[in-house]
Length: 111
Length: 111
DNA sequence: TGAATTGTTAGCCATATTAGAAACTATTGA
DNA sequence: TCAATAGTTTCTAATATGGCTAACAATTCA
Image (cartoon, rainbow over all chains, first blue to last red; front, top):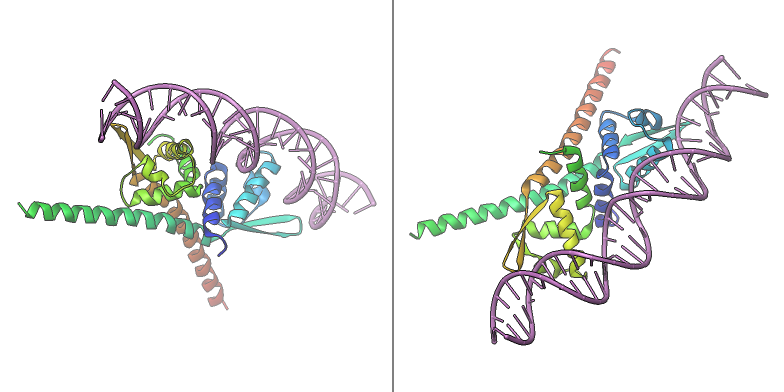
């Protein structure tokens, strides 16, 4: 599980770039090679490769090289953990609102 | 709604810092002043204020100044939209897996 | 084998990010 | 009104990020 905080740091940072999000989006539809991934972008291969590395270090994707082709795939876990983090917060926020409302109701009834 | 891509850029970037995530966590429990927010951290006020600004520009929080006190509160929407983005991706990924499995089943039956 | 394909490394540059100190403003309470 | 409080601005410095070119593998295909 490693340092979970650092992990989230990396995942959120990885997702903060539109090119990297686009890569994630495509990989959700299935594995792709590095050059397939680079197609939609007007960006030099080395730059794209850096994005791939960032995604890989964040745990959002993994890759494997066969012959001269490196194939990338999404790693569900990291996405799920990130979603979970956000979800817990939305939930906390909602619980608080509920308590608040209940309190208002009690006050009302006292009158 | 503004430029939604830039919006996600900012939200994810904002969440990539542990101090900012801690701020978000606390604000989910209720509004806090800038100095209340700074308490848990060994960080100069101007630095903390910058984090608050980053969060504000990302839309994750809002703040209002009354007298000399600036009170910050969470803005649910940004959190929800971010969660939604991730969720769509996990969903896409799962649909793909389902199709894949269905395909394998068909292949099996052919033998 | 030799050329094309696919990826990789190294190095450079511009810009953005994060942190701090110092100095300043506005409000509040004694 | 004067001091303390709460926040803000400005500047500086260190580091990280994202992009490029050029040069270099390693495979694969003709």
